[in-house]
Length: 137
Image 1 (cartoon, rainbow, N blue to C red):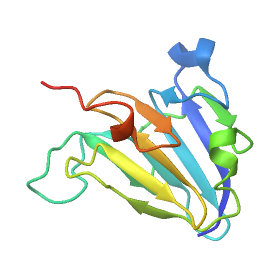
Image 2: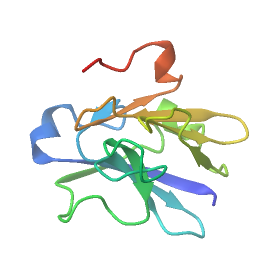
Image 3: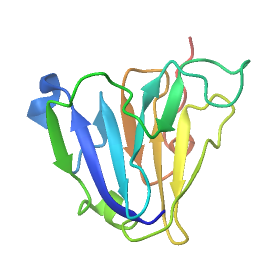
Image 4: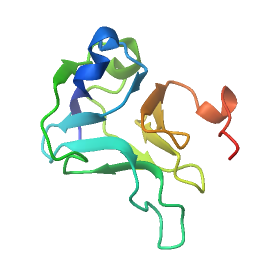
């Protein structure tokens, strides 16, 4: 799976801050590959690791997490955080037990998507545990 493009999908309520450089969105990210189905990344109530893990997490799958089409779609492939992954083979992993973080790793770079229990996806070039903390309940 070689990454060809990164599309950020926004809701209409996000229009004022929707851009290719957005580091947080309320809908989902769509990764387009050369010879594979797209992968969507979003916050979700679906369990990611097993039946006993917390249901609120960051997930990824071939289908959209939403039933409706996005209001706004922006190609973010040229943004600094994403362009290091374009043309690369990606591996996906949850580096935390709560599945709040999803690491997208290529041989030369990585990007982290995380939710911290919110209805949004945040994006970082460094592990979010190094600069933020999971909110206590």
